[in-house]
Amino acid sequence: MGTLYLVRHGQASFGAADYDMLSPLGHRQAMRLGEHWRERGLGFDAVITGTLRRHTQTIQGIAEGLQTRPEVLQLPGLNEYDSLALIAAIHPQPLDPADTPERYRAHFRILCDALAQWMAGVISPQGMPTWNEFSAGVRAVLEHVRQHHADQNVLLVSSGGPIATAVGEVLGTAPEVTIALNMRIRNSAVTELSVSPKRLMLQTFNTLPHLHALEHAEWVTHA
Image (cartoon, rainbow, N blue to C red):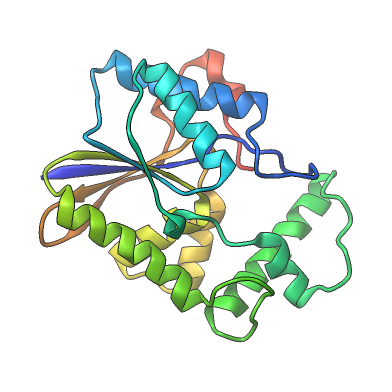
């Protein structure tokens, strides 16, 4: 039986003009994860990522920590939904910058509402696939892993939405639970699925084993 390690990208640039870029801390989170795995002798038979810049930068940081240069398969089915398009579909007026705790919480309340409506087929955000198309892309990646890597260690770097969708597929969760899982996944967090030719099973969710030391306590982030 193999193991699929699903990793959310390191901290990106929330609130900046271009979110799709790791912050300096995001780079450190990714490299530290690679170092953690190298210290424990963990290697990977296959590496899969989405095509977003933050996915590429995260695998580069992990590879630097592992001191390897892996061959990477990029699959667009692992790309994140467009949160700005989702929010605009139910809140056409621009939101205030999420520069206070209250505005930050308001931003994600609106996003969760939009996600629920998208998943129910109520809204069709501009430029986005339907929820059924989005989740089918994630299922296709899981099927690829099950078919081709059932007895191997596979590293998958993606975003909170696809990872929560993958966990939801394995557990058969309701949409509201999938959204809740999505909102809790931390930057560079690891979720593990055991992989056999017949099924995938959840082993761990949203863990940060590489950041357990006190010196890394302030490295834990969510955006």
